Length: 358
Image 1 (cartoon, rainbow, N blue to C red):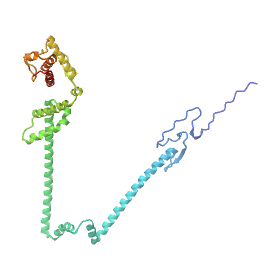
Image 2 (image 1 turned 90 degrees about the vertical axis):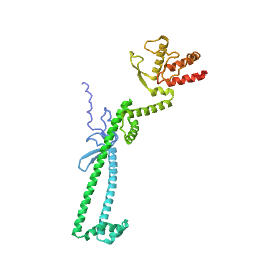
Image 3 (image 1 turned 45 degrees about the vertical axis):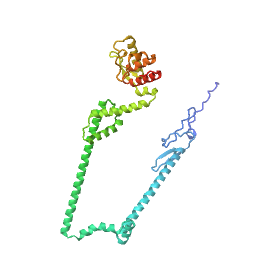
Image 4 (image 1 turned 45 degrees about the horizontal axis):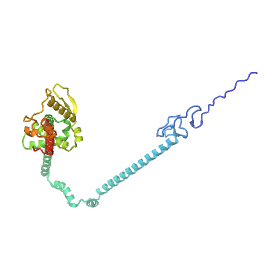
């Protein structure tokens, strides 16, 4: 007889306890502990017990112990908050009911009403002043009452007229303020344009502009954009010069920033730092002095004109100067207007150290 084939046991159809994954499959990842209701029939994380719960509408739900605990804590906190609000509302309703009852009681007891008003700081004189108008009105005859009513209506009309006039004056003042604001804004922007000041500096310069505008208006003059532009330019130049003078040399180049520069009319414009521009100017000046480069001004000689404000010496004094001082002298003659003050100071310091009288 042939050997019988081995009998393979049928797979078990009984689900694993606690919703565990079937053998051979990776266990499901634990769900995040948040206050979210699981979908009906969803498997709970391993190791957590699922509790069946039926709400007040008869709907069944399944919660893990952690989710049910979070719901209980949240419900407890909500209940405490509602209890506090109920207590406050009850206290407010009680105070309101007590007050209304007290008012009704005082209405039927004039003596108690007077005592209550006096306890609140309202004396007899104040009560008499309150009632005097009504008492006097009741003592008037019909003609006097009609006259008093006419007077009351006239006073009401006059009050309405006064309020209307005040509103019109307020509107007129607002319109004048708006007109002055528009005029000042237009004048300010035009002044910035004429002064070649970037609009980004407007917030810093506006207070100076406004004070000058008020002074000019108070003096009875018409503001002129050119005058304001000169004023703003001078103020800004003074501020920038003061700031630049306080900076050390290693930070001054960064403060000045880069500039566009053309060594000649036919050359290409390039953007360089001020240090590079000054260096290239010196090279061009030396080249002009040594080789006479066309288009570049040659170095001045003794007796010839130099930069406006430069120190001019006679030929004998120049010839007797040492070499370094000789170079410093011609450097201040060739200096551009913005370089001139520094070149002159350097030449004077070198001359004093060399013992040369200028």
